[in-house]
Length: 542
Image 1 (spheres, rainbow, N blue to C red):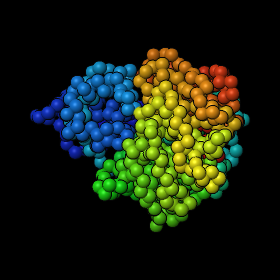
Image 2 (cartoon, rainbow, N blue to C red):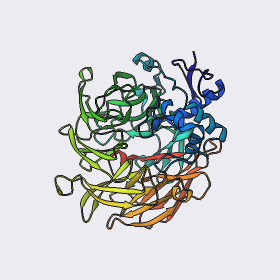
Image 3 (cartoon, one colour):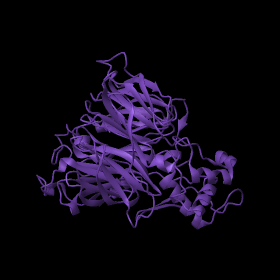
Image 4 (cartoon, rainbow, N blue to C red):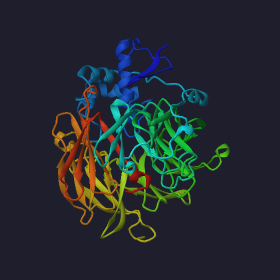
């Protein structure tokens, strides 16, 4: 019996799995050591798109029936150079030997990890600062509402950066490859302990580790509690009243509601079920979770089912869950400015799905010409010609798609594409600010270095690209993810170093949001990815 062991940034998760021999008598084989390393690398870099069981979603199916047909040589080329469809190149991440071994590994049967019980989660819940010891006011004199909480992906950390001084305050140990960090929001005044919007931040790591950060603490005590709700996970959200935190699992496929104060897991709900095609799906993963601004509910995107679940948390013992059919494969999204409509990408269907959270029904599905829409945190703005709009970049096409999203005031343009802006390359993130004249889009999914290292700035007034900014020219680095400061006067762009965690060479480049000129570089970060401004995220500033 082999072990499914993931050693990630010092955190080893060893759990039993169904037996797959690394030296099976028939088909491709690997040594035990190469099998274990390839399994870990696949989890870290591949499972998010292709699935733990390799059945595919945003990425293609990689079960042996598919991968054996592609063959060793073809698989190695795909992993090395990436594809035009949005897959990254890995030649500057993996060695040639690792690429060869992973190519062999994905031609073998996928190991199946185990389940995780509520009791196991409770055993993994830890308190570092007791709630009764939380300070009533900040233990520092910084402008904490202009802090940036920054994911340091490969270090398994979150950096706290002072947006005023550009100083890195601390690096906090979190789960591996944190995907999203979210805060108590502007309406969470009922939070039982320190009900101040934006004070508490919750992270979700790829290893299912969910942590709680208190920005009022001194740097060494900002991590106040944690738990683990899955072996592989992506997203987290906090209830509107600040009482509950919810985490969504990729494996096991479930969501978990925990006490937002103590982090104790309270309820587990499986997301396995029948998809929109009438097929039962065992690996029905939770891709994204959001709290609805105007309703006492969570939105849970069940990726493989093609369903949005609106979960009413008013009564945890008798959860009211409305399952809304839409399209596959649901990934990430954002609210319109009113907070009523949720706009989420269905990657494989090339659609933006719109859910009305007031009526708890499907509002619209927008077909996109661009392949694999991926808005990341998304962007809303006022177009002088078309009124309020939303926009997304695409993983598989160099394009920004813009649609009307104001059915009350501009019904003629609502949920219709009004602009398609051609960019130099496929991207993953788009962002703007009400005080800015521009929309910023990255191109991190393009394999060409000069494109991957640049962001493009689009005029809200004309829909035209006004500037392409080369953020870095260093080999092996990429520019991605844009976030504005509290007032919208600065745009922050990450530079992702993809190698050498021991010598962190990642940085954040700060630009004047009006002149588009560089102002500062914040160095000493490891693969900085998502950056979340406290005020903007707390108040849904997009």
